Image 1 (spheres, rainbow, N blue to C red):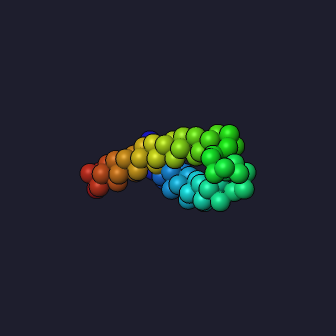
Image 2: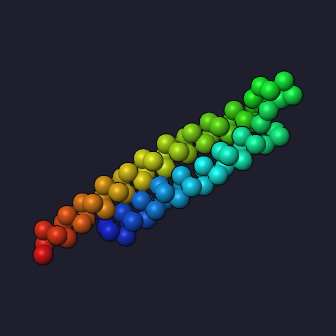
Image 3: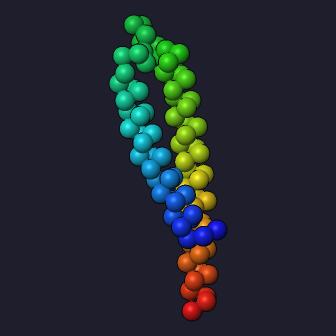
Length: 80
């Protein structure tokens, strides 16, 4: 994998966490997330699942990018 692709995947993983943490905070504070009795609404459940899946995918993609970036650094060091 190229260094550019590795950097992109790593940056995507970091960006994904930043965005979805913000989304999760906003979801928690949303009026549509909670029923009058305090229980979560379908809106909350669907978006919570979306958030968890996005965290997982962002983490996986970021780890792949980070490992590839480390491998390209090792490869570049060995070639010198």
